[in-house]
Amino acid sequence: MYAVIFLVFVIYITTKIVKRTRGFDKVDIIIKETLKYSGINNFLYSEFLANINMAKEYIDHVDMSSKMLYRSIKTLENIGLEGVSGDTDFQEDITRLSLALAYEFEQILIDQAINNNIEFKPKYLNDRM
Image (cartoon, rainbow, N blue to C red; front, side):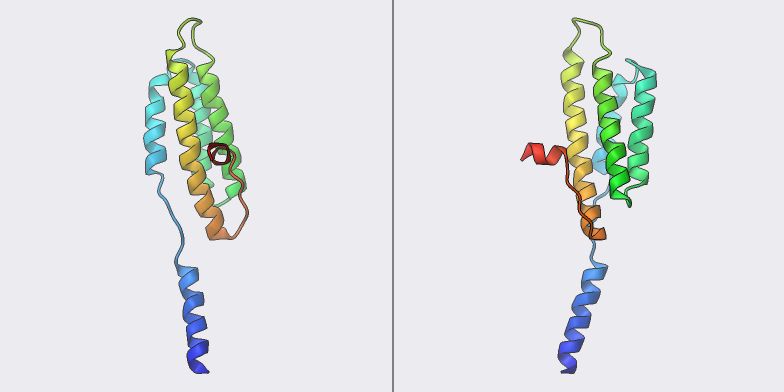
């Protein structure tokens, strides 16, 4: 009987200790790749950086972090719309970067939601699958 109680206790403690975590390494690399587009519209790029940094800072609050992530992605995509007509080469790269950022950050948000036992429905990962 004591062995069963001990086993249940060990399993409970193990599940509480083990948490899924990912770092922001890949996200930071993608953010650095966007730097070359900061000259297109400084105001929008500053807004993008502020929103993505808020999303990273409030990662413990999955709902708030996801809202800031989606706002930053929309801002990044708006930078692509600011180009001079006829020069559309960078728009494809901005779209690629925004999707890569969404995929990587949503993976982190999914892990955080699992750790907090809350529901999170990714927007971009669902479209990918």
